[in-house]
Each structure stands twice: as structure tokens, then as C-alpha cells.
Amino acid sequence: NAGVTQTPKFRVLKTGQSMTLLCAQDMNHEYMYWYRQDPGMGLRLIHYSVGEGTTAKGEVPDGYNVSRLKKQNFLLGLESAAPSQTSVYFCATMRASGGTFQETQYFGPGTRLLVL
Amino acid sequence: AQSVTQPDIHITVSEGASLELRCNYSYGATPYLFWYVQSPGQGLQLLLKYFSGDTLVQGIKGFEAEFKRSQSSFNLRKPSVHWSDAAEYFCAVNTGGFKTIFGAGTRLFVKA
Image (tube, rainbow over all chains, first blue to last red; front, top):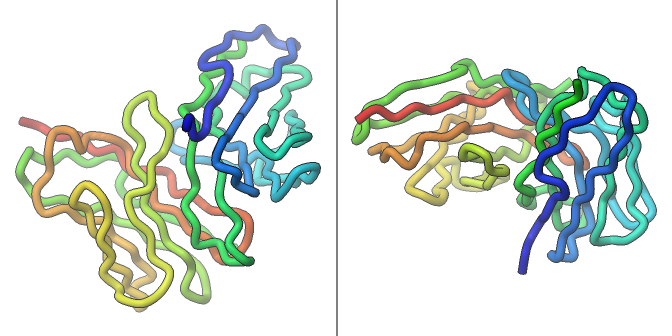
């Protein structure tokens, strides 16, 4: 039972390059989230998904795209990386509980991205 | 709009001393409240949560938090800090939707 895993753990990109971050979960949770963490700013929500085939924008979606083709995977794409996207990216999952949001979020270990 | 404030960017306490980390939120009703801990190089882990009932909530690792409606606060406490508690702590709020708002975090340093 791996929980929430993220691939890769660390990546260096040049400005303008593209990449995809993969989040995989084996907990059968309905909700999945992508956050970025920057010093002094806590976690900010980029995009989220409430089920297979559905995605929605969060607080800071510009420059990112996401897809959730399978329930267990949530992909975050950077089409043209910029230095401002240097950050630590966390994926999280949460069980749906009948319309309430009392459930715990389970986080992956993070991906450190450096854009030069 | 709802918000979460953690007034202390960092706190240093001596091992064995008591700890209180502050959290204030802005929301018209009672939200769901959470405290998460992040050890260096790790993801976040839930310490405790509150959504109704007894306003003093017990969590893992000996932590507790008290919800005070009149002060819109949800402060985290521990009677005796251990060196392994050194980490970053995040207060978070959910107001009944898909999104959870996180505070900026408080980094705890523990000195011997």
C-alpha cells in the first residue's frame, strides 16, 4: 500500500521546456489536488479533480494544465516552464464523504522543480 | 473570502518546554479546521482536525488544539516538546467546499 506517490522527485528544466508531473494513488479516493509550496506562502491550490474525467481550476492555475483520465492518476503539465514556476509541488488526495469535507487530505512526498 | 493566518513565521522552544502555535481564520460560520505537520523533505501529515462537538481536540504525537469561536482561533498546543517535533506546522480551513485554505506555516525549532 504505497498511498500517494509522485514522479519525479526532482527535476531541473530550462525556460520554455515542458514536463509532466505524475501523481498516483492506491487509496481509491475520489478527490485529487495539485498544490505548489513556496517559502512564506504555504500551499496554494493549482488545480483539483473531483472524479475521473473532471478537473477544475484552483487559486493559481495559470501556466499549468491537468488531466485525470484514470481515477488513480492525476497529471500536472507545464507546457512552457518559467522561472516563476520553480517550486515544490505536492499532490494530495481525499475521500469523498457524502458532500461533507471533513476528511483528511493525504499528501505525496513532493516534487522539487527548478526552472533556469 | 475566507483566510487563515498563522502570525508566527518561526518559533524556537527548548526541549521539554510547552508549545503553542497560533492560528486565526476568517469565516462567517464554523469551518472545518485542521493542523498538518511537515517534516523536512516530506509531504504534509494530519495532526488533528475539528468540525463539531468538544472544542478541545486531541491529535497524534501528543498534540491538542482548542477551537475558540469568539476569537476565531484554533491554536495548537503540546505540553512538552521533543527534538523530533522540529518541523513546519500548517493550519488549514475548509468551509464546506472542495478547496482547503492553508496558512503560511510556522516553522518550529527545538533547542537542546
